[in-house]
Amino acid sequence: MTQPRTMLEISGLEKSFGDIEVLKSIDLKVQEGELVFVIGPSGSGKSTMLRCCNRLEEPTSGAIFIEGERITDIPRRDLDRMRLKVGMVFQGFHLYPHMSVLKNVMLAQIKALKRAKPEAEARALEMLDQVGLKHKADAMPAELSGGQQQRVAIARALALDPGVMLFDEPTSALDPELVGSVLKVMKDLRDKGMTMLVVSHEMQFAREAADRVIFMDGGYVVEQGTPEEIFGNPKSDRLKTFLSRVSHEDAGAEAD
Image (cartoon, rainbow, N blue to C red; front, side):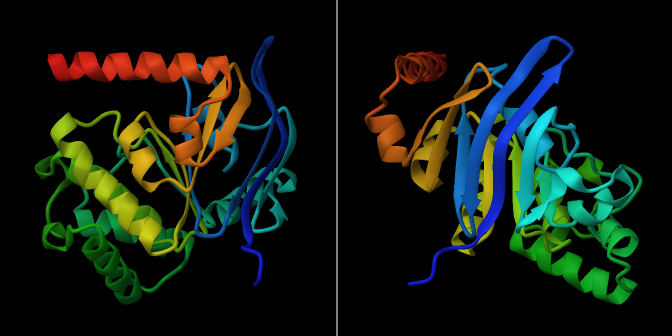
């Protein structure tokens, strides 16, 4: 049986902002087709780690590899080529308000991949269909709900054929009733074999869909394991405290 290919590898990653150490010797591998979920309290370094993975933040030290290529050695002028391999979906949707949904999904294909317009349009419609929004191709972003806009943002990233998808709190800006549609798209991507590294507070989704869960606190990876291990049998006191706090918050939200 062949070993799965390592799509993303983080080795000895450290990041400081001035005197503040945000990431401290992070080691992590994400295999092809794996959905790895990152949880932890605010300020634990989760989003900074994700942003280092496509050099939106420059690591202070350490190395990051995408499909075996050491991207931390790539000159800044060549970063656009590297970022084609790494799709990223943010909390905000970052759609161009003056362009239709279809043109939002076509633009980067034409600019970055130099695809001809007919090919870019066909790919855009295919990806919009995948996220359930082909019927909104001619709509403007302002005509869409937040959940629909986030699904367009996912389609835009997928249209560039990345090897790895990074999700940074993709549902945190959405009303609760809109969260499910975005999580369904992510689950469908997992079922299709997309490699994903996800930072989110959606614990139930992590339980149901993740292959592996990483718990970060204070800039460290404190614990990692299957969802059953992390949620059902946490080993560190820090993780136990975090999960207890989260479950209390969830119970309070349900009471509201």
